[in-house]
Image (cartoon, rainbow over all chains, first blue to last red; front, side, top):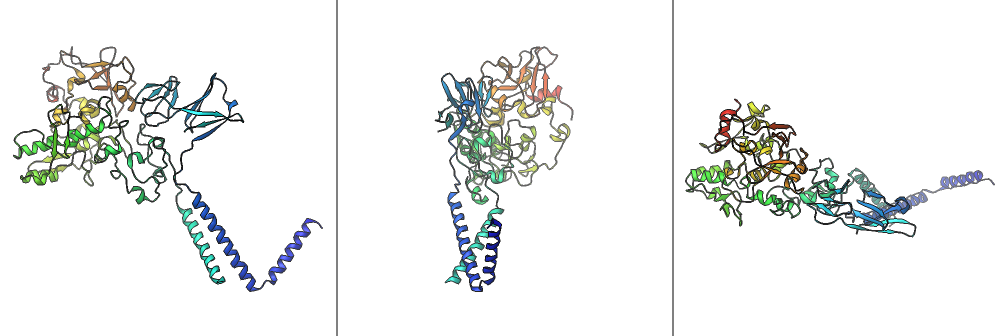
Length: 155
Length: 402
């Protein structure tokens, strides 16, 4: 028996069944359908309510992908962290690009990093060269995973 | 029982459909997590169209709540705004210390020139001490012109002027009806007072009175029109002790804008007030002063010198010089180490005015960005008496006929 024939027969049986269904059975079916549907929707709504977090914590872990993408000597800025990944002979290091004065995002220039908000300046190693900031740029923890991916942690 | 269940499920479905419909009509929350606080806020859900308040205060760093207060997680407007500081103006002086203060912000130390709020609180723009003393003296409530009262009580425990405190000026406690009327009608120009409704020369209170020139923005490029929201918006009528507000909106600065009896040299009607007048003069120097005259000290000679002296200057050698800070915040001039700028007698930099190699000076308008060059008085045919430097002496020859 081919597949199309089976489908045609099933449809015919269902049609016969529906044609013969009593009014009582139809109402019962509709009632149960409403009941299950409303229950399911209420459950979905409840899950959605539980899942909503109005006060989420900022992301603290960032996957930078394969370490092979960052050759020796490279300095790569990640604006979404924001931070700069530095690859030297000593390995990978990451400097936060959040100004230690009030938290503006630093911009890279020829001398290092400059704050567009209040003109604090830092050298390429993150040391303060011009106030109002007084603290060095924060070094962020970076790890190379077993799959040779880089992960940066902001806290 | 089965009928009840069916009705309940139908009702639940209808309710869910209604909730879904209402939810789909609502604006989706727009979350912002400022780097300074790390705490989410949803103000941008409704206020995404507001411009950045200034380069120094980007929303992604400061957010809204740091300055404005309010309920950061609320999506209902009334709830969100219920705990805002100073209504729509967090720089109102009643809340400025909370909104704008902090040692890294605007209530830092005097040594590093970040004591803005303390200076403003003791300034004559805030205390109105000179006007109050003058009126009380005129109508016999005090025997001298010393400042005894201010709009708000304020103390200065490190006074350099001899004024250690100002008491609260309470017009109701005055016996003179004229002083009472002064209190009722004329206390409208100090930084604590709300502008009158519908007035042409409107401004905000507190820091925003000067620095908020256009809507939701803060700037140190302040045009003369902002200063004149108080300083040229009408006249006191001392016979009736009322303030007669001007109603015109002049366009021609020289011919229509100022009082008919006033005289001006070219720089006075071409430059903006802040091009010459310094931060200490305008915002106060941290000391209580008796009146405006005691704090306003820039004169024609500050830029032009006298027949016997060139203007005072300072060659910039330190990148932390406050001149660089000002030029960074309002980049109208490309100052460099080695540039020689004009300074006042108190050492305040006129950072927008520097000496050129050929001995003349250039000034850049802080609000207009226009370049002007000018010569020193020394070596010219000027017939001035070097001791007579108030502007009216210079007006005798240099005023433009109005």
